[in-house]
Image (cartoon, rainbow, N blue to C red; front, side):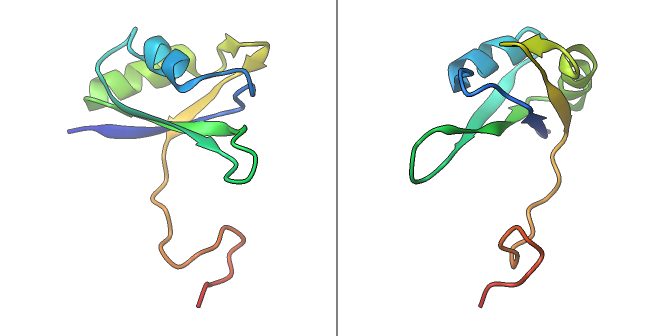
Length: 94
C-alpha cells in the first residue's frame, strides 16, 4: 500500500525529477508532486512523494530527513490528510 510523504524546505532549484531520482534510492516511487505557485509557476518549496510501501517510506524518512539538498536541510515526514473545506488558514470556503 502506497504511503504519501511531505517533503519541505526545498530550494527553488529542486525539480520533480530530481526528487523522484533521490527518493528512488530507498524504494519504489509511485508519484512525485512538486507544488508550484499557480501565478508564477515557481516552486513553493515543498512537495509530496508517494512511496510504494511503508518500509520504503520509513527508509526515506530515516535517510532524507535533515539531508542537505541545494544548501537546504530537507524536512521529510508523513503527509497529513488535506481538509476538504479549508482554504489553508483555518477558515471555511463557501
